[in-house]
Image 1: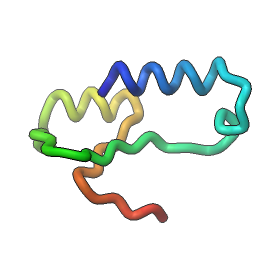
Image 2: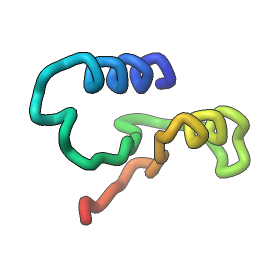
Image 3: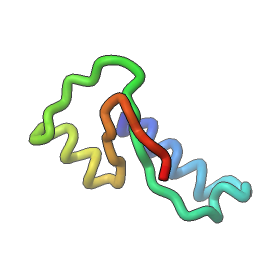
Length: 61
């Protein structure tokens, strides 16, 4: 997941699209089983990079 996040951030900064101008948050909604606990070191590392893990459900505000 970290590699995908890094790729996306790089693409947004180097591409000349209107997407790069929008305010955004990076959210991961698992499409399958994700075996991460709230205290998981992997989950904390993703959060430090700016990715929010929302489990299998997410309501867009």
